[in-house]
Amino acid sequence: MILIPVKNLSNAKQRLASVLDQSSRTELAQAMLLDVLETLRSWSDCPETTLVTSDAFAMELARSFHYEVISDDACRSETDAIETATRLCEQRGIQSTLVIPGDIPLITVSELDQTLSNAPREGSVLVPSADKRGTNAALRNPAGLFALRFGNDSFVPHLAAAQATGKPCTVLSLPGIALDIDTPSDLHQLATAPGDTRAQRMARRWDLSELQIAATG
Image (cartoon, rainbow, N blue to C red; front, side):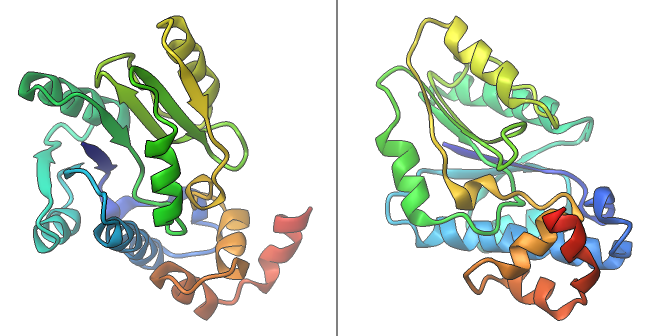
């Protein structure tokens, strides 16, 4: 099963506050989530997909794609949301989970195929963020093989936890999955990268010229 945690989008992307007002940040977060879900819909081998959220926009979007919603009423953190969803998967007898965020608009079907094809029979696959600090995809088989603890520096702890299980762990470098949009530099990379996703079209409408120094410095 694919699990996508989505926090309250009305307060999304606070680290972009220096360049975008909240309305624009929410609009961007919504566009990125839609890009991710449309890529999943175009994937012929897509497993069952579930959004873990209490955000009204995300829940409505999930229904329009015929994806399940696991309600995240507590809204404490992405970590708590995935922990709850993982327990539910285990109760249902679901063997494996692939956790991806909703802010990786350049994700491709090819990268998803690579993630599944590199998955060990028992073990894990991790895809780090572009800066190698965060974790932008985590496949676990069985679903509760180790706990996921998300944050800006989650990759090294996730790798250590995966290796501590004694099961194989494959680390993949996948540029589309790796680019999550959190900072002005990320936003500049999104706008200048090849492609024509909704989020890219939106970013290209904004004046990002002042971000070039931040992106290249």
